[in-house]
Image (cartoon, rainbow, N blue to C red; front, side):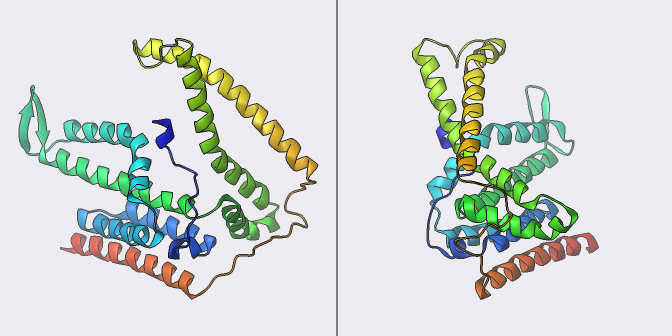
Length: 269
């Protein structure tokens, strides 16, 4: 299961989405999240999902990768679906062991599943198609106006990117520790909930130790390279926007307006 987590990983490519300006990709991702949360019906949510499908096809990312990224959140989806099915009142469709299942519960459950899948898959395209270094530069430039208010834009962007970059490393480290504990006879997948919780202690302690050691090594490496923050820092590649970036941003705004019009039309009717 840990190997299926692809959050924070970058997959190089030369697709249209890969070549977009990272600043525009961040803005488009924010607009897409607004689309998903502002959609009030299956039709408007379907429009947001259509936007994701278009972006996915243009990105050249494998379908297997998207499916793989969904595996870790399957328990969350199942838990959310069960809550909506059994605890929302409406017209009873059928009863299961004395528990009433309503039409509203089924509709709400399906709606939440589509929303969660759309949100996770759509937002994941940002890190899949943007390298951590470029993502750092984009966040820094977008926050640069706040530096006049003494806001540490560069430091914040660097911390966010380092945290994002080390997610796959920590997952790999956790998997190695779990394999080592299992080889020593540890029972991690059996027993009661309390036993499983106790079995996590031999995993968490070396993971924290390893994380602090990596952080110290990274700090030492940055210090040896005379890293002093964003002051006087030059860039090998500068972010340059073009017509395709504005076209992608306009398309996302068009979809957002379409979703709002659809929901507004439903309210009026």
